[in-house]
Image 1 (cartoon, rainbow, N blue to C red):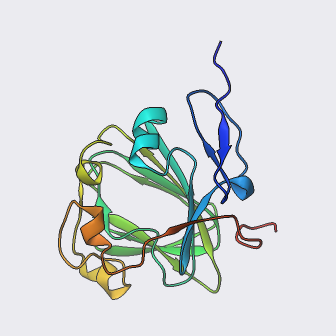
Image 2 (image 1 turned 135 degrees about the vertical axis):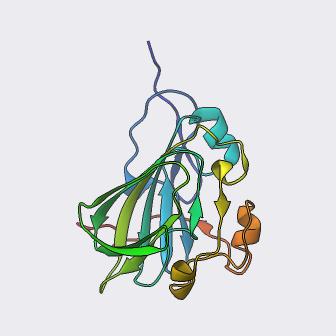
Image 3 (image 1 turned 180 degrees about the vertical axis):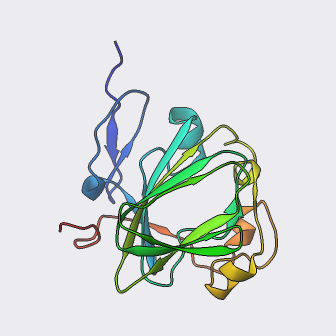
Length: 187
C-alpha cells in the first residue's frame, strides 16, 4: 500500500516532504514571489526535492501580471504543456505570438522555444506541466535562447545559456512567500 507523504510547514506554507500521495491546496502551499510573478511548485521547488520525490513529472502554478513572463524564452529536451486557468496571456513560440485565454491548452514537443507573457488587464494564472526525463541536465537538457520577439516583451535572456542563474542574473531572486489573498480566481 502506498503511504501518504508528509507535508511540512516552512513558515511560508506547506511543501511535500517525502514519497507517497498527498493533497495540497494551492492556497496553503509555499509560494515563491518576485514582483509581477508568483508561483508554487507542487512537485519540488528545489533540485533535491524534484530529483528525490518527483523525478518524472513537474507541475507548477504560475500567476503573472500583464507584461510579466512566466519564464524566459527557452527550450527543453522534454515535452511541456500549459493550461491557462484564468486571465489572458501571450504565447511566444518559435518566434511567433499567439494570444491565449482561459482554458487554452498549449502542447510543446521537445526542443520548442517558448514563453508565456501575461496580457490583458489583470493576472494570468497558468498551470505548467513537464516531463522530467532530462531533469539532471542543465536547463532540462535545453537552453535559454535569445529571441527577438521575446526580447520585445522583456522575456529573453541577454545571451544564450543553459545556466538559469546566468539567464536570470538581472532579475531579483524569487523569495519564499505565503499565499496572498486575491492571487487566485475565486478569492
